Length: 235
Length: 302
Image 1 (spheres, each protein chain N blue to C red):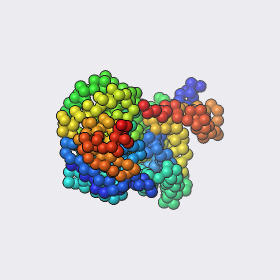
Image 2: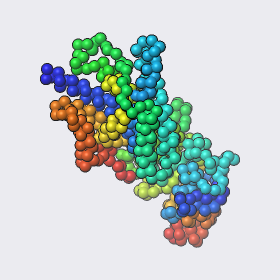
Image 3: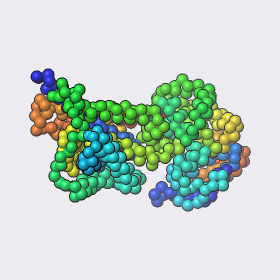
Image 4: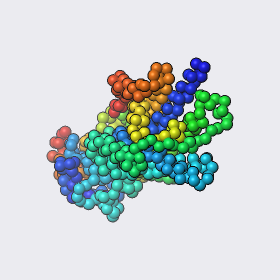
């Protein structure tokens, strides 16, 4: 569904991604794990066209997208829930959800989807007229994922959804990720530092170090791999 | 008599405040979205006035009624200035969007000087008489010492513009996109907003309201030259900073505070110091409340 081939991305003179190749099939949950600063978030920003690739190919459903503007990439159904949630702080919860559906025109269905989200996350329904900046970290993460879902993603890019959240909420977030994948058949590309949880929920995984992919395998095999166990699972 | 003078100054303050507001809106909207002080904004106001003058002068030979001339001149001036604002952003600011903010600021100052001198050369360095586009309303006859027809029109038009703009920003799709872009540009792009379009529309709206202000106040004070945009632009900027730059209600509030202060101070103290009050205000705000009356402090991330 999404193919990255030999993608190189730079911030000025500094190379952030080197010859990156990643392949994601329809309906899969793929995880990308790696340490701080390895280039995981840059990978997602490159896919979305925020930090365009200098060279290499990015193909989404047989169509080249590496030169498209972000809004046209989003229109194809590639939706990112970025690191740090990035909730619009002065928009209400309801308006944040509306922004997620910015490119949609089906009013009746948008309304149904918002009702559905309020069902899964009753806390958001309670806070619907509060501004985003007043929510707690966990609530913001739920809102960020919900806002992503409002865009009807075909491919959902999640950047560290567990970052800074209490363990109980982390478990909840990961079960939601599985649910999104199973119920809507949404393909998910999950970037995580929490390798333990990520490898449990995903089908396949990539390991990234300083802008390169160093390992690619099924999650079972990655969990058995000695290097991965030492570096990311703390065993 | 004394009370009548007070009322006259009150209406004068309202009028000044309205004009400042029509200009300050553009400053604050543009700042909110791309964090740029568009110093060429005052020149758009001046170009609006010049366009209306030229069109009204030409139309005065056709024998059309005053109302028709006024409507045509104002509409075309607003459209022409909006096109100027749009083009200015594309030429002077868009190529510098990734550059340090200081570069865009210098570009704005350059644009301001360029437009002033362009009008100076293309038109004239002298003051030109500006025709009265408004006429006299019969129903204002009893209070003509306090409020003139042109002032009445300025107040009504400003009120209508503010209501329409509030509706646009609060409830429409493009309004929400503008607010989202102002709050987090990267996230706005990730929701599929075409921010180039949002920025263009912001410049168009800001330029249109500034031009509207330019035409109306020129008709009120009956003369213009190439330099009128500079001083009033700086004052509207002071008003925007006073209210909290980036905030729309702040810009309007700051404009009226500044308008009333100037009106009463020139009326009761001395008109020689007219410009001193605005800039004294600016210095005081920057010292004691740099974020302005309604400015929002930076929000902490949870």
